[in-house]
Length: 174
View 1 (cartoon, rainbow, N blue to C red):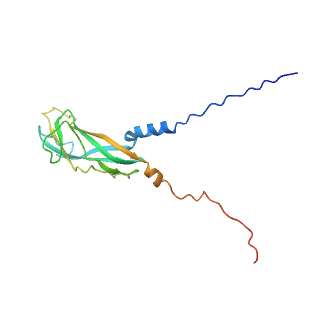
View 2: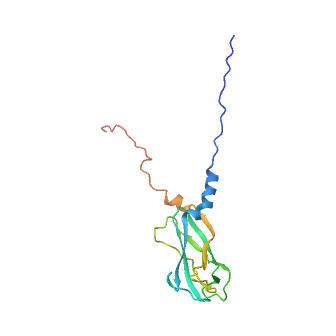
View 3: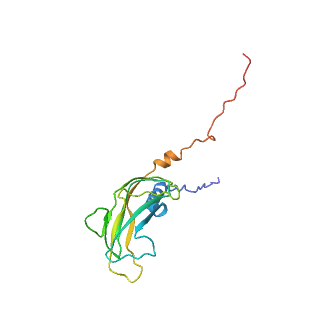
């Protein structure tokens, strides 16, 4: 009697990485889809120097190119090496940093050229001592934010005519 040994390849479970991929996508979302820009600096332009200890106004806005709707985004505004401090418009004193009032909603897939400003309007920094050349004055970055997948679920749930059924029958004379 001959015995046949049957061997089989063990089944290796497939690793599901959806949740890990989602966590990574959320963690890298600001670097990939959010742009922060300082603008409307007064005195304006790179050709105009700023006087020592001058109170300079500026605005900051944010652009979202990605698929998440961003909720409650705040900006961290910091005095850099060439400034003595920053403050909100109407603030009493300059400080090393401040956090903006939250932007309620930053829409998903913003069109090129569309930006959203925090409700604070403009900010101020006080220039430091003479620098003898260009020096970093103020820095604006993402402080906190929450993401919503509502746009993904609602904005991408379009009609799909390829998912269908057709009823065909012979129509008889009554």
